[in-house]
Every structure is written in C-alpha cells, then in structure tokens.
Length: 82
Image 1 (cartoon, rainbow, N blue to C red):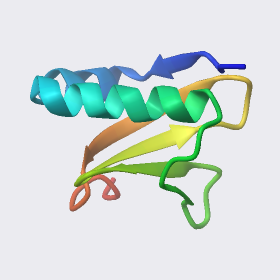
Image 2: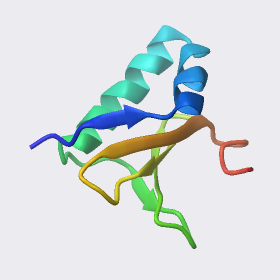
Image 3: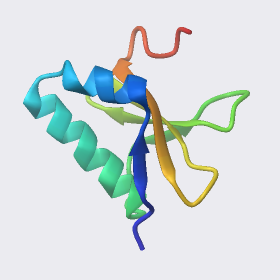
C-alpha cells in the first residue's frame, strides 16, 4: 500500500529549481519509499525525521503519520543547516 506524499512549500520551491533529471530521480525515490521499497534511509539524530539519499541530494522526510511529508531537499552540504 502506498502512503500519500505531500511536499512542503520549501521542498516544492527547491525541487522547481533543480534540473528535470534530478527532479525525476528525487520524485522516484520518494515514491519508492512511500510504496515501502528499500531506499538509502537514515534516521536523523535527535529528531523524528529521516533522510533519503538521492545521489548528492538529501531529502528530509517526516513519516510519523500515514502520510509521507517531504520537509526539505537539496545538496548534501547545506541541507542539514537551519
């Protein structure tokens, strides 16, 4: 069963600025995660969030409910800074 996926406003903005090939790769990995398939997943220390690695990009996800909420995404160097 696939969980519904919701992208936050900041995630949509970051995604719209990316090249189409990177957009497709990120959307494909998030969809695979929502379907329950195996992805490069790691829990973030001190939070209830997880990250998915997609090449050099990282996708921060909150999956505590029946929804997959994409909080933010971007290159690995700056995605963890807030």
